[in-house]
Image (cartoon, rainbow, N blue to C red; front, side, top):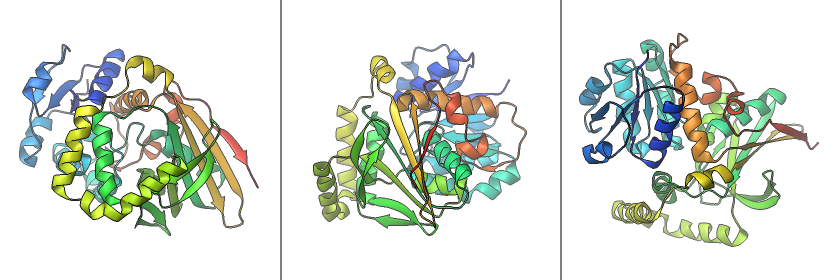
Length: 351
């Protein structure tokens, strides 16, 4: 039986993934940096305590592991040593990041992963399974698409880890892909009115992972991602552009992350059950033809748990080629429909 290790197991999302693994009769090894936090988890599972400061020590911990589910952010700091260790230990790497830099890092390791015959597939949760699958489905319907816009709408609260990642994003500003190149842009760079599936709302661009991943899944050269933000909220976001150099300072980042870590709490089971997510996408070709698509999914955290385990189960006994993948290129663009709570895709041709 393949050995699965969940690192960052005592985090909010890590525990959801453990529960999902047990629901599928998997018995993962649970791991993290803190022995105290790990021992506090009430699971009858093997535990491993190690940090990510030294790649050689990580390799030893992963030497008997077939599949890693990496849940300990910020992934901008933790993904590189984990990927390097997985290449050496021949362990399939997955994580739940939504960070563009991590997706680009994964692609830079693609040839090495192919040579090691392992899979590197970051973003096996809400970041980015639904949007990645929707992008690929739209590309199938419009093979000559030149412009891709994606977005989602949820009322779900952020987990502490996601909130800390968002703090990092404030200093980095926005990101879009233009003519195949990822470009830095101001926060709330563009705004438009979008019906994500629950009524029209003002929306603004955000630096979501699909700016990276959707390109590798579709090869569409121009990509933007949107979330709903009120016009007033959009103005506040744009004002932050004036102080972005301050927001990037390490001591400011540490302070803000400490604040959100102390005050942010992920949604409980009842709220996860009742707070689904609306996912939207749009492609346009050079002739101006527009095709939109919509999916409703489970709450993002519930989908992350089911997505991470669905991909881990796929990798058990995997005998395909190695390399860097997105969720839709690893399995297929129907993956989102295999996850509990996901609707069928509704396509709408506008012109």
